[in-house]
Image (cartoon, rainbow, N blue to C red; front, side, top):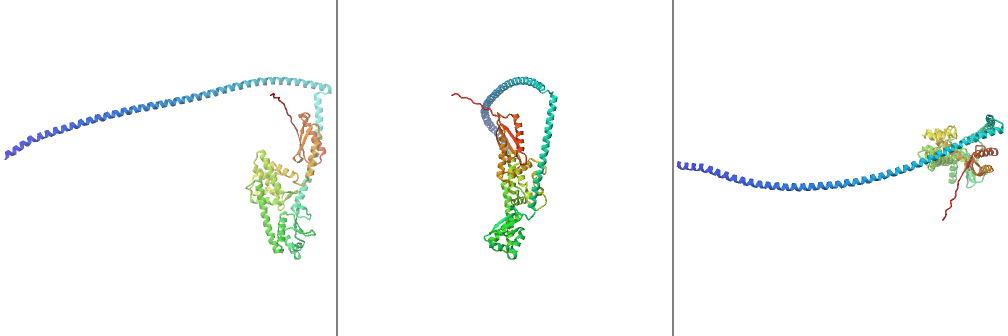
Length: 518
């Protein structure tokens, strides 16, 4: 048995190494086969990679080449454009140089011409100086006086003339002061009449109410005069019931109260029920209507002028000015006119038009309360403007529009001028148109009688006369003498106060004709 075991062991000992050797050999062959395949695949991959790289290289070279060609073309194009622009600049510079050369030549020619003219003028001055000296010598020879003696003689004559003119001027100023004093006195009297009641009644202090019949007069008077006393007490207006048929006269210096009384009385007449309680009710309604009317008139004035942002109380006071008059001129219409004129003047001078209109509209605002408060309408207007936060330009225009205070702005001067223009226009105040036209005609007739005068025009409401002269008959030197002669003639013939500006105009024209041969 052991022999078998030994044999098996020997067999195993021999067989295992042989099997191991065979397996190793087989495994080696398999590895070698796999390595061969891997090398082949590797070579194939390397070949493909080399081919792809070569393709990429060729494509990159082509792209670089195309890019370089494109860049070169762009650079060539830009170089061409720059060259063209440089050529244009060069041509412009050449043209400018040519123009400068031409201008320099022209300047040189002008300088040469001016030099020649200066030389000619110098020669003329020398000749004039010689002629003047000769003339002076001849005058001294003829007159028998030296130049110093002649100067003394002329100075004496001028001194005497100046003394005479000074005396005339002093006399004129004295007469003007008297006239201004009379004017101020009349103004104070009229203002006093407007401020306080008196027995005198003028046409500006009454209103007439028409009645349907004369029986209404008895109803207005009432039993034992109760109705008329109630109406007079409530309104502060006197009722005059006389023999005037179908009419009742309302008398009072306060136009607002008269208007309230008029409206209330008309309502009572229409209603027919006239007794103290009804009178009180109608007077209250009339007061409310007048107050609404005052506000509407003030707002309408601001809208007409185009001025906004005024305090409501100032607007109401503007409306009250509808019931005020000055020398027969409605105060509200006058303020609107002054505002419009101030705006037009400001526009012509390039100033603030809105501010000028504002100052013109408010320049007489004190007249709305001067019959209720003490003080002149100027001071009252200044106080009102300060109270309701108006600007310093408006305040200065209000206090300087009559010359009481110096004007600090151009707008204040314009308001002063516009106020004068509005008051001086024909028909604004109580001056007949016939008188106005007669004065203008007198001025024009005086100037037209002078030799060499072509035509004349009286303007500025007769405060200026413009005289057109014939240039062939009147020289520039003669114009001065003519203006003085005209002013002296006006002073001698016209009798109304004031200054008249004489404006002499001489126009020279050169006309030539050209013949065109066809």
